[in-house]
Length: 204
Image (cartoon, rainbow, N blue to C red; front, side, top):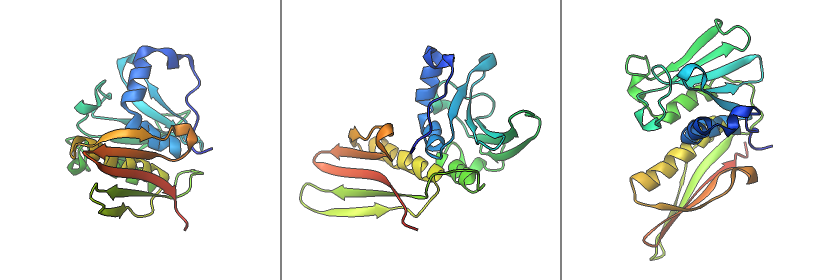
């Protein structure tokens, strides 16, 4: 199995849960590719992402307090690893909110995911590589490749590269491989320029 199953509870039909799960897919999807069932908790009017690490602990990702409904309002990330049964037993892993020790990273996602990958948590996913192929309409092309990374970091990097192509370079996404069919692969186009961004297994 390449990606973890969706959460199994009756809140998956709730419009607010669906909105949050979709809005924070850039946070949730990398954790799912690591093999962890990942959910959005909505109790008490506060929202956070929770991943079951399958070792009796869970990962809680939020912002300064609750996650805002609109991810654009996130000012930084917090990540806590806590005992599933005794949540008072917890460790702060990362804090890039305005007063946190990693505040220089702000709402950048990759440093958070690199921190999670560095923990050596139970994960059955292989190490991955993110790469891109750029083709110009006049025949010139070149490749870009990131280093070998853990699944969480690689999937976050795929999301970041895709976002930059759309938001900063004016590309639009033509097609993307469905999650159930394997690691991400997406095709982008801008005025005849074609870029393919992909995630593949490392051979190491």
